Length: 383
Image (cartoon, rainbow, N blue to C red):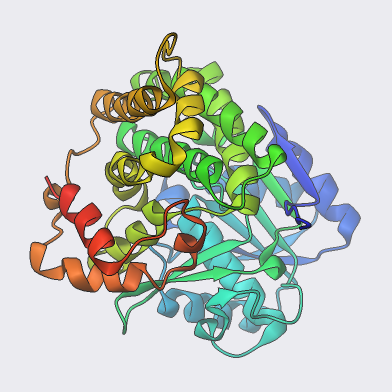
C-alpha cells in the first residue's frame, strides 16, 4: 500500500521570519490579499506587523476582521463576498485555527465555486484553491499547514470536517514573535491541542514511520516546554520550541489523520461553541483508555516521549503511565477536568455520539467503536 505526504511547499520558521515573507510573496507576482483575521489582533497591532511587510513590498490588501472561535458558514460567505468585491488574487490568514480554516474555505470557494458545505468530507473539490498564505499566531492547531478545514454549520449545529488536498497553503509562517501575546489559557489549550494531534496521529491506523517520527518528537518537545510557555509567556525558547512542536504534530496528523478525540470534540464545538483545544485536552485520556487494549505498545512509546520512566513495566502498564502523564500535564496548566464544567449536558450525549460516528477523523482511530462505546467515552469525560 502506498502513502501520500502533504505539507506546504514553503514554510518560514523561527524568530523574525515574518519579515522574509514579503520578498517571497513578491516573487510570486501576487498583487492584492484578503487578510482574514480577528478584531483583537487588529486592536493589539499584531496585524500591523503583517501589513507593514506587505506595504514595504508593494502588496495591496483588504482586511476581513470578523473571525471568531469556531468559524461559521456565515463568516465564510461574508469574507468570500469581500474577496470578490476587492478583486483579491490571494488570501492571507492571520491568527490561529479559526482564521486559517475560514481562509481555506474562502480560497477553496474562489476556484471551485458553490457552497462550502459541498466540500464536506474527503477530497470533494476538483481544483487547487486560490493561493493561500497562513501566518500563525498560536502553537496548537497546525491548521496553517494542513489539508484539514473545520467549519461550523449553524443550521445543523455541527462542525463540518473538510479534508481536501486542494486547501494546501502555498506558504506557512510560524514566527514565535507573533505568539508572545497569547494569554495563559490560550497557550494551554492550543498546546494540548498539539499534543492531541501528535498522540492521535501516532496511534492512528494510517501512521507511517515518517509520521511516527514527527509525532514522537512533537510529544517530547511539548512535554518539555508547554508548562514553561504557560508559566512564562515571554520565554522565547519555550515559544519557539512550541512553534516547532505544533508544526511537527501537524506534519504527523496531516498525513496519518486523527481519531475519536477530534471526532467527538468537533461535535462539542459545533453543538455548544466550546473551545476546541480544551475539549481535546479533556477527551484525550478518556479516548486513550478506550484505545489501550489495542494501542498499548504505542502508548508505551508515548510515555517514554513524555519523560516517564517505564523500566521494568509491561507495555500495558507503560500505556497507563502515558495516560496518567497526560492527565498530570492538563491539571498543571489548569485545563478543566470535565466536559460538564464547559456546559455539556447528559441529555445531548447520544446526539453528540451519533454525529461523532459520522466524522471523518474517527475512521483512523485504532479501535473502532459502536454508538454505545462513543456515548460511554463522552460520559466518562463529563466530570
